[in-house]
Structures are given as structure tokens and as C-alpha cells.
View 1 (cartoon, rainbow, N blue to C red):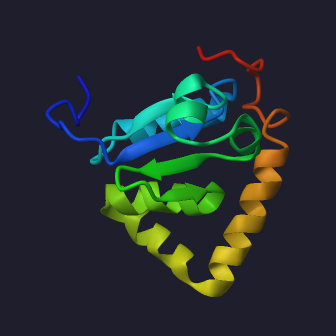
View 2: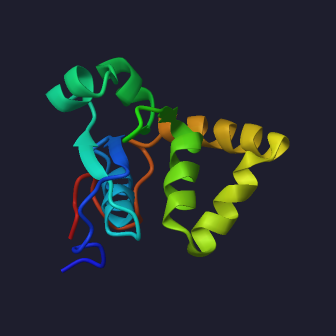
Length: 130
């Protein structure tokens, strides 16, 4: 049972690339954190019709749609998830609010997102989750 099993209200929906091993592992870790997030595969009917995140947008990057309807993309979405989760990740994510660091994070995120299909753990085939 995960740490958040007694949580009843979601902080929002995390739209992620479910075909990407690293993306799926990170999303699952985020969902088990101190704050509840609904995990929504990119391009799904829920992502497009209910959350308003197009297939093109979700192919480009991760999205967080908060329960209040605020939409965040890429590094900003990841920082928001980490901040909401608190702890050391939350403290580090707070640094992402600094102008120079947020620009650097956004650039690094775009680079990694663009090449996520070629980035895999050594010794593991793409899609191998064992």
C-alpha cells in the first residue's frame, strides 16, 4: 500500500508519456508522494477531452493540471509536483523559481524531453520495466 492510501483528494492530474520508461517511473513515484496526483497517459481521451492537453502538447512535455485548473508544462510542472510534495525535493524545486535557474531548467528539460526516446538505462531495452 502506498504512503498516500489515506488521501482522498487529488491535487491535480499529471499528463505524462506512458511509453517512456523514465517518465513512467517518475510519474509513479510522484503519485506515491505526500500529495495525490492522478496519472493520465499523454494523448489519452482524458488528457485531450477533460484536461484540454492536446496530443501535440503532451508529446512535447509533461503537464500538470491542478485541481484549480492551472496548467503547467515541462520543468515548471515537475517543480510544482516536487514543491507540493515537500521535503528536500520541494526545497530544491523552490530554487526553480529563480529567473536564471528557471530558464536553465526549462532549456535542460526541453533537451531531455526531445531525446527521451534515446535515453535509457544501461543494459535495459526501451520499454523493459523489469
